[in-house]
Length: 95
Image 1 (spheres, rainbow, N blue to C red):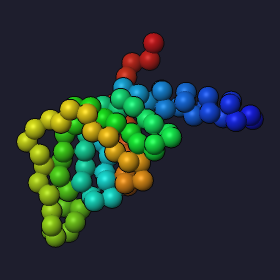
Image 2 (cartoon, rainbow, N blue to C red):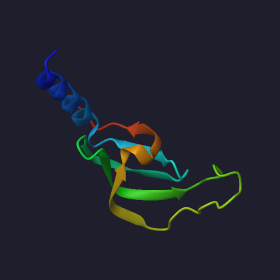
Image 3 (spheres, rainbow, N blue to C red):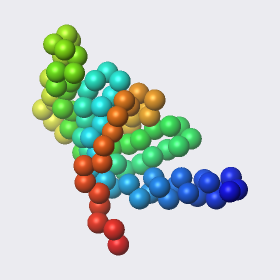
Image 4 (cartoon, helix red, strand yellow):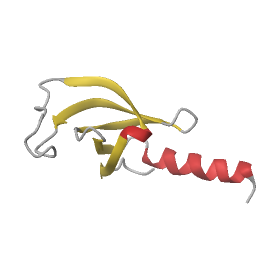
């Protein structure tokens, strides 16, 4: 497979999940939920909008736990290397 075809394949994969509602856990053990709006493979980032900070929810075994946030954040850009896990909660309707 050529580099161009490989790149196109990767772009198609990320574009299929754009608009999905995600839950992700950072390496700091905080969980965030929001709608995926961008994946930047060159900068190795992913951006979510309408983000809810769910706090650490006991993942730090009671040490330096962070409470959930009260407000909804606009757009938050996460460095992929600082994301421990993410899961797609809801995918957009396919046309």
